[in-house]
Image (tube, rainbow, N blue to C red):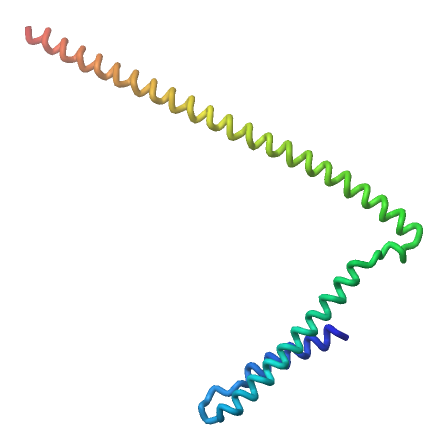
Length: 146
């Protein structure tokens, strides 16, 4: 019932908002009155919302387990135990996942550093060989000329 009243109030406020005059033909008094009506409708909708929230909060505060049968109560206990166990498993899995991510990051860093070091070593060796090759070609050319 409250939801229907709340919805009607919100719809009425929206309709009134849409019916606000846009032309300058209406008097400022009529515009003011229309705005007052819209504001009152919005206040009523807001009050209905507050009442609905209050009702829902009261409902949440009640202990619903009082109305359960013995079978439902036993099932509730079992489900709560199962929920706790699953939460523990989830926590353990998250810890393991975090450890694995940390290990992965460490290994990736080591691999990148080793790869860069090896690449540098190979580049230096290539430069050495190029210099030696160049010197050998130069020496061979000198020998051929001599």
